[in-house]
Length: 161
Image (tube, one colour):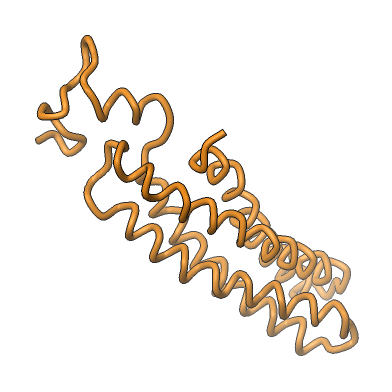
C-alpha cells in the first residue's frame, strides 16, 4: 500500500462531506429545518477529522508522484499549495461546527459556521480541481517511461510536444 493509494482513498471524504454538509445545512437554514442544519454541522465535523489524513498522505505522496507522473511541471506543487489553503477553512469549519453542536440553541453561531462552510467548500473544490490534473496509476507509470508501443521519456508529452 503506497502513500499515493492512501491519499486517493482518503481525499474523497473531506471533499464530499464539506460540500454536502454545507449544502444540506444551508438547505436546512433556508427551509427552517434545524435538524438539517445540525446534520450539516455533523458532516463538517467529520470532514475536519478526515482533512488531516487526506492532507498528510498527499504530502507524503507528492515527492514520489512528482518523480514518475506524466504531468506538467508544477502541477503537484500548485495542488499542494491549494490543499494547504483548503485544509485551513475545512478544519476551522469543523472546529466551529463542533462548538455549535455543543451550543445548539445559538442559531447565529450555526449559521456563521455554514457561511464558513461555503468558504471551505470553495477552497476544497479548487484544491480538488487542481488535483484532478495529476495522473495516477498504471497510465501514469507506463506514460512516464519507455514501453513497447508507447512514447519514450524523450518522446511526445501530454501537451502534444
